[in-house]
Length: 203
Image 1: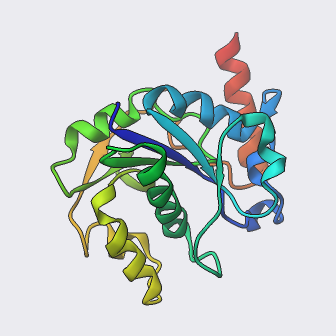
Image 2: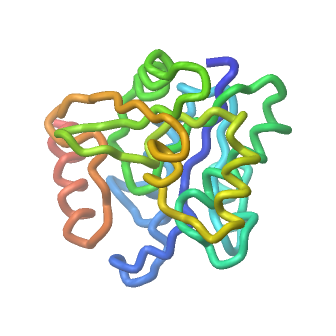
């Protein structure tokens, strides 16, 4: 994946978790962000973390921390844009950016390869499981960066309005491996479910 950069999206407010820093929630003895990092890092040539606030809290990851470039944190597309702008300089010659949300600790090990195989030039590739699309587990052509910046500057923020309406998108199906590979840790109950899955997998 020499031409693909990656970014973990952790710029949200975690309202269903009470507004805490979801990336640092502990799952099976380590922060959630480290689970996602361990799965995504081998799949890309360079990896960063999109997060706002004090970057020092993520020092243990060793990842560059890239803040949103637009005020108001206009949803995950702001993180995608921040990642695209970072990738342009961090990985010269890169053609695409893989994104993954920080609350998906069970990402497939072949996520990036399969998205890249399905994406025609200029096409956004989105993961899908159990018939549901996961628009921030995706592969974004870096050539769309300037248009994404214009889209956000115009006040738009919906992922589906950009990926699939404004630009073509393709969905790639991933199978359930005992738990949905795109299972989101959104609530304390979800964190407990993820912990049980980790414990069962370790037996």
